[in-house]
Image (tube, rainbow, N blue to C red; front, side, top):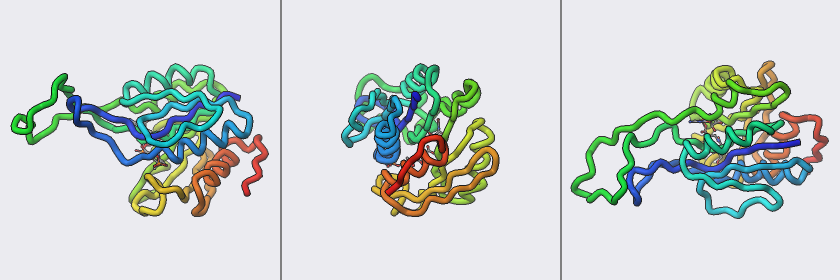
Length: 215
Ligand code: PMT
């Protein structure tokens, strides 16, 4: 059973000393990778820059930008049975990256951006028969409706929704609370717990063939 997981943020460089990013710590994706490995899956983790230890026994590929993450995810998706896209990919990157540090007085007041590819949508458009594709949704309002739209638009089997307007869960915290929505309208609520427990319960929902004993 090959499992491919993405985690962490991406960094979109403006110049060699400045970038656009987000607060993802990698904790949720790393917990999923560790649990999947402990369950006997062959796990590849594609990770943006984080400061936590890589999960033991997991092949970890480090990337920085959304474009690098896209290349790695597409490469390893070829042989993946289960793909979980937990990374917080920056939706945009600067139109131009400067090779040298831009002096403070020369920084324009407006930064021109261009869209990054939607990695999950690409994975959904080329899903292999039998492959299970799971996305995450970081929402602050109309949480379920927004997540449902993403599930359909990106051709997912499951989407894991976290309400990131609650600072006790989601980005950076050790805990999370999620709702897992299925393409056939299944709704599983997983209440507040450590991210390792949440990870076990998510895997149990999206791949019930694994008999998981959550503590
Ligand atoms: O890392 P932690 O600090 O533990 O925090 C965990 C988390 C909050 C980052 C995680 O639980 C989470 O919600 N991850 C998804 C964050 C996100 O980017 O959500 P979104 O609703 O913007 O994107 C929807 C889905 O599309 C996600 O699976 C995302 O990986 C994917 N996406 C988004 C943009 C893009 N250009 N390419 C993508 O593949």
